[in-house]
Image (cartoon, rainbow, N blue to C red; front, side):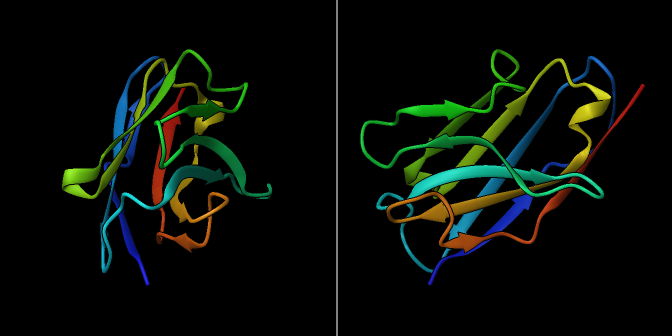
Length: 117
């Protein structure tokens, strides 16, 4: 079992930046693919970014490419999402997830990101 706890959300103006962190406990992070998802009010949860356990290949939703960067620190059991050039459309609850094969066998509780125009 992996417990995931996100932090770093908040209120920011359009064009600003935030860095989300997700710390894991219970097991070491290294055997898991790690992902960030988000869910805006009235919308489905969507994939934002992911980083593979092996080799560290990264993947991004088209809507965030060039603005968001995912990274991981296996020594600290932490995954990060650096979000730059934020837009009001990025407003959502952001969730981190860990998966053995896919991205999401385990979920965090979420952190709110609100971008004002």
